Amino acid sequence: DAKTTQPNSMESNEEEPVHLPCNHSTISGTDYIHWYRQLPSQGPEYVIHGLTSNVNNRMASLAIAEDRKSSTLILHRATLRDAAVYYCILRDVGRDDKIIFGKGTRLHILP
Amino acid sequence: DTGVSQDPRHKITKRGQNVTFRCDPISEHNRLYWYRQTLGQGPEFLTYFQNEAQLEKSRLLSDRFSAERPKGSFSTLEIQRTEQGDSAMYLCASSLSSGSWGNEQFFGPGTRLTVL
Image (cartoon, rainbow over all chains, first blue to last red):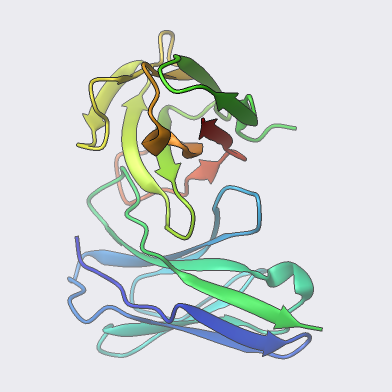
């Protein structure tokens, strides 16, 4: 499985936008980019996914580089409840099984 | 609540004892996954089922571990002769497989196991 690289931790102020980067230079043409997050003392939860085009949903936006070797998860207005570990994951379009998690980015939100 | 549930939420046991965890997936989901998570690490895949069939097992799943999903609904994960290295959070997830791209997995709150 192709690997992703994320910063270990990031800080942001409450009510400001947050940009969480992810590098995936060995991504293949059939890999979707998925993001999950894990709030303290909870299981992971799905955030967003995309293939080539930028994506928006109620939780976040996903900006994908033109060469697809990197992507950025954007939280438009961070709240204290967004403090979590964010995982950037590649999943092959033809596979529908296990998720391979890395260590993710621990996001701290400062009040 | 119609999410994934796990029982118990916490388990403390002595080394050498057997433990069993239960996972109840979202009712219409045909896939069920078990993951293990240690402190500071992301979840690691253990095994998964489609309906009652166990389709894949990780090398992490030693012969002391066994998982079942007898009627394609709830699942149990048993660890025999527990060791201190088994201390971790055990996460269950479920999804509705359509046979195409990676569908969203819904995770339960986990069972935290402490082996003394």
